[in-house]
Image (tube, rainbow, N blue to C red; front, side, top):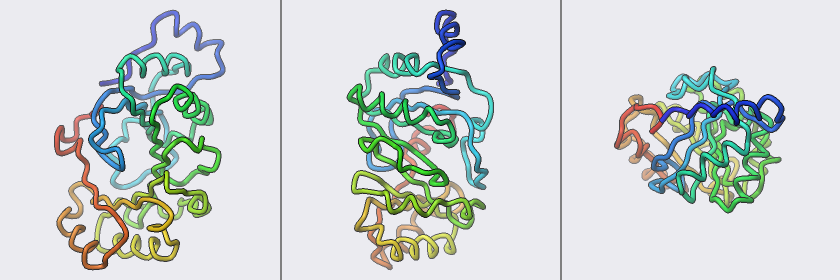
Length: 230
């Protein structure tokens, strides 16, 4: 479901309220990835991203969107009645007030996750948030943008994801997992890039190497294909 345009009263508040964010969409669906897969979740997709990954499936979030006050976002999320909230993008941390939004979701009692590229510093994210760090593999075209200092900030509450496009990506991810001891630090996810590597192949590689990682497929794509807002 595309972002609902704010009503006239909300739009007027946005003009004077510095606590606002540009939002591409807010929608209620099932979490399709990571630790909370399958849970009914409200997704807040913020607009903008400094990266251009080759496999990106949300390019529509790079531009446009609408300005929302943080209070209006909270009201819209509450309307759906879900316990889980996922702030995603684009790259949500590209908007500085994302940190405020995350804190307010936590204060409101939600189970909150953040999907971030790993190219921006995550140290200031509220520790109650589960940070899903998407480390960029070579085939993404953006591996040079990875902020390696982020790995030291990860805890068992967080997750690291590798989107694997081919065998080279897999071997690169395997090396990073071992070099940084990620399996002992946080949950590690390997995700086959849709249409670029067979999930079964990735499963076989993972099993053969006994990696301390979890295979994930995108549940939402199995259910709804490439439909935006699902």
